[in-house]
Image (cartoon, rainbow, N blue to C red; front, side):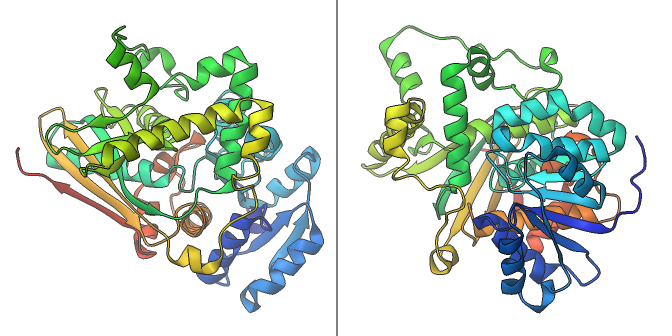
Length: 423
């Protein structure tokens, strides 16, 4: 690994004029001190200059750089000038490859908001080794996909280790409440992967593998599951709804689970299975125990399945695109101000102990909250001593860990771990 030379800039925010990009720029303007050298980058110089004016006096000295996502030489020149390049430009599998490649080649730390399994897999395969050689940390999934999950499980595993209670076994993240929209970028990621899965058998296989992001796949558990041919089992596979017999509460699928769970498993692998070889991790939405709960959970399952299926076909995709949020769009300030999310991670350990970790914040998860998480990630990579602790392709937990958790706590996020009394 080569040492990173001194750079002209600390942070380049690429895609700054997009909806979440602009929110991130606002956060950086509030949080970064005058000593942090920041530049705004994107395709349109005029839009970047307008944004700089909107940000006010704190951003007056920020540079603006116009460069297209397909301009490989321009991106390398930009990456060579900065310690960190934080990119909101997606869908990443379509337009993000040259950006991350430039960072890997130039030894520049990189962060993004991807929720795309196929893009992270490409990154691992195509630029991971080069990034390790140059000392770059390529940190994916630095927004609502997947920081609450990734740092929440990390906090749980660290507490378990401190208590001497073995490692994690059965671990479930439950979304208790969430107010705020799923971002247009997240929807576009679903759209791109649905299209890829429809046309590419290898993409389908990858997306169907629970350990698709593991760089040590042969050492991971098999993804095959015992499949009964009974009608109830077939129904559960089609409509993933369940009831906890101990509490009577119903759960249904979480839209981000297919990506978040893979990031958490990747963190476990990258840390040499520090969470434990017995980790079995899933994410669901808690619908409560009222008479309407099973209907709401089933409705979520059917609706989510319908959207994914609809995005796979051109005619139905055209219809859905009229109603789904588009990249670059988002809610107004009042709607964002009312946003919040509350999650709980319930974990059993290999010694039989049980833990609950509360994760949440009073931010709209897909927009304001993501901007805070992304901005704090960039600041941590650029300014905190000893960061990052991982090079090559990383996760928030393996690159930043407790440093990022502490930064988010200072911004009003909750990460609270408690040991539960024996049942």
